[in-house]
Length: 367
Image (cartoon, rainbow, N blue to C red; front, side, top):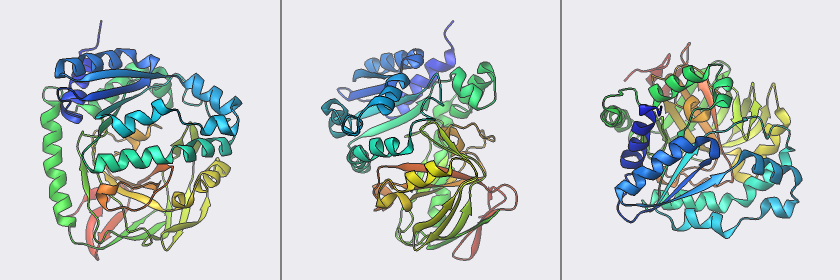
């Protein structure tokens, strides 16, 4: 029997998150294992009057390319891959996989080749999105692999996913609209301010938000959602930070990350696990060592680490930074082939001060 929550999620993605309109060209991207949600989304797009196409992909083919392809083959970008970010109106990505560790043994330099070759596509997508020409959303479809990473049974993980995406099952859109109003209140307080100081375990970090715009995330680009973010002034980040949770990238889990910044740039980086992958990724391009995003998670329905960044970056009581590409709508000028989110828990003694005033303490807003 089909899960009624799946239909409700598809409805919210199509009619709220990206608000498909008549004649919109809509690309639905996901692995075959996510077919139930992909099909539900496809039907909703048709009902909304859009023109959907499904771009099915496979974790196995990605592994084969990175394992056996030459550098030329790995860096080759097909015209079909350019069309969506350059010409389409909407992209809906469904996250799912049968083996989250499939790429764990791929040499790091091969991952770098792949990311570098697609940096222009990322820039195009971000620029068109900032201009309102391209709407997009990323959402999960629960699988055994994801449940195992989160250390849950599949049924437990399904409950967790739908509860995080739709905290009010009777009126999920109403919930996200209410969250948007509360986050806008916080963003209003931040307008015109400059210096941010973050303190926590092995963390003493300074950055500037002068002239930058905070964005409220309440169900439009990510589902689940729940964060406010901006792009800090590129050369303003100084100090050190320790990330409470492992950072996951392309199936690689990098744990115990410590970064040191001088004038915006990572000048030293260590990790307790997979340090070589961290260092290789930081050398993807010049922008990879700068911060493209500073954000605070606000989703109180997400309280535990699951090894899926779509959830983990929203943990209520956490902040995260993303190394690499920043979002132009925030004022960020940082460009890179990567956008790697790293999460730090502030619920036990952490605090954030803005222009010397207490803004956030022990995982809660103090304003």
